[in-house]
Amino acid sequence: MACGKQQRGFLLVVAIVLLVVGSMLAAAMAYMVATSGGSATDNLQSGQALFLAESGMEYERRCLAQNLDWYQSTTDPIAPNATGTCATATTTQTLGSGSFTVYANVPATMLRKRIPDNTSTADICAYTIDRFPASGRIQIDDDIAGSGEFVTYGAVNPSSATCGNRPAFTGIARGVSVGTVASTAAAHARSSNVYPVAQLITALTSTACTTIPNPFQITDNSKFLSAGTIVLDDGPGLNHEEILYNGSSRSAGVMTLTGVSRCQDTGGVGPGVTWAANQPVTALLDGSVTASNEAEMVSVGTTGPANRAVHQTVQR
Picture (cartoon, rainbow, N blue to C red):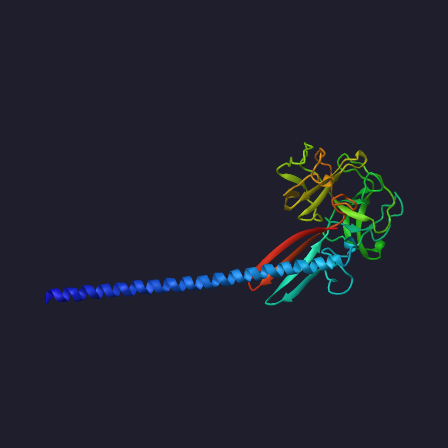
């Protein structure tokens, strides 16, 4: 009898243990199924958000293709057209179960009003001052060895009386030098291009196109695209180099370029040019070998909690 009681007690303990283990396994399986289902939903929404972001890029490409006067926009992000679906600087469209938000930045603007002579220090009227630094340097016109000119401005004004209550650069000093590159004040026609000017921090000491300093740094300028093309040009010295960068970061007044490819004006063949620190750096100039104009498109697709962003720089 004692033996039977002991067996029944043992079996009871085993049954309890099995119940506990079974409950734990069931809970674990339920958690795994729930996690797997949540992961599948997250992956699906992430893929949908990426599709929406790519759809936004197609939308913006179409808008940019309809108007080639990118630098004449009165805003930045730019409104590619004055009317219609492409007339807004930032567009949000609903598509299926989500939406995309897309916009395009440009690295330059144009003169809204001509500069009549080489002595005027009146406000410089531009189509937009958006994304330009509050003070700094600009280059007017494309060839610093010809009619191009470096100008220092002390402030920007979104509503200058000189410009008919429109945007302007103010506190003007004409024909300034940047680094060792001098410029001469000159008259400029309406719709002349206006570029931001930075300076080289990292000297380029080799003419080899494959020699890329690490880090590659310039002074920060908010108008520069986060990925695009910069130009080094010493004007009368007739040295010129176009440099591509695929990414960048900004900190404490310094812009660090990544994914750098030199000698784009020679198709990467070279030779390049040696450049000292402090030489002027501009955005892609109209008439450059690489292209004439650039725009950086940014599209963010959203589905539920998932967001995916796509960046692309286009040229013409």
